[in-house]
Image (cartoon, rainbow, N blue to C red; front, top):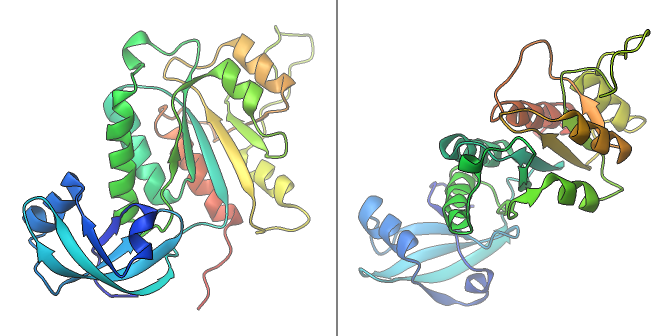
Length: 268
């Protein structure tokens, strides 16, 4: 692996040739105008699927960059735990911050969710997907990740519930009691903590690689009907503690806690 930090995601086919011409406008601008690299400088090209190749710049122009590819290797940089974040859409700058930091932490998949209380101003069209993909790619390059996180199109919560993989535990970040039913003579037990739930799910083989999904509500919160529908689907409500976190903060805290609990110690 080369020692410099110039890492770029490219189409997978790029890594299969001995030479390649890179024409992506943003990439060419980054190499020629921002970093001001020169012929002879080395890059690490990543295909977004876990493979990497050392490349040497052979020609740079305003519209294209030519490289000579040499050593190929596994890219590395990925967590053993595959985390999918189902996150309520929110104001643009907050959602983009979440994508950036979630990518840095190690989230594998992002699914924007339309909850009942998602505001019309927070919803977005397909054109936003390109900007979001760019934010994820740049964050993955900066964080030295080898696999580009997957970003899905926004989905209504009913669709999310209908398509959740049955064999993947799904946690719902929720600070209320474990039921949405009206108050009863015997109060519902409090929602268990994320930590205790993770340790129960890990037993009897803690720190084993696994998949997990995390559902987080919109800035307006989750309705009782949405909570009830989720519980019927087998979703596990968990608490992050006594403090109320913002919609963009809670899922990142959850993702970091999952990796802290489940990731093996790095090899010396």
